Length: 308
Image (tube, rainbow, N blue to C red):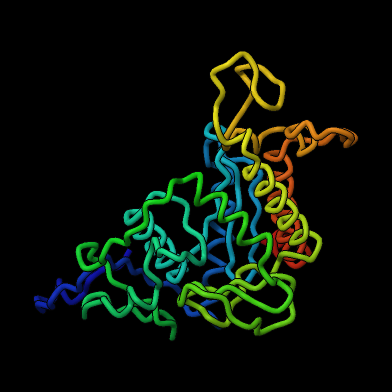
């Protein structure tokens, strides 16, 4: 919190627009050191006094220092950070996109669904201007200024085309530019490159390795194949469907939860493989990404965590 001494002395200052929260601290060598120190204290407090908060980890040497913990009653996994204003603008942008269209959004559409970030910047007014640590985070906040796109595809169609797009995407030499809504040449050597729209030099997918990317592409290929099969896209009212199963056989998006392609399609002559459901394999991929990130930051944080 900030004690406004100007107000006490009788000086009238014009209030700033928007939310403003400030507080004073002792002098540190850098702003990053201040953030690390504050989060270290908060992490200890959450660990000792936070009801239902377990598994507290102080990941202070990461690019963005944070405290990770699990809220046991709700089973939510929480990441607590400080002074990460760029992330707040990212959340605001996602909220704006969510208000514009509730359907799945992916990089490129013949008939667009959502405007690009560059277009939202063009629509911004003087009050929308936002520059944080040298990064231009400006975009329009007034929804009435944004023209709704004329796209009438169903959620099922969009999801299928999402899988189609990424199963053939040239990840080896192309990257994804969210600001412009198109692909571009990859600026660095890494399996996957996704540009942070507010920090262009930052690759937000740097922790993804080659094996994980191959796994993702394989899942997209498998999911696209299943959704293309005609017998899985339409429910059957008769006693059995084309695959030879009963009325309760899954169809449409529910097919993605089947154990494997060969089981779902009942392909003759193909040996059935015992595999976990696609949803479990996707969960396994996400866990792999999370564990890789924790391994990268864990070694450097052990010593700091003991000292805190």
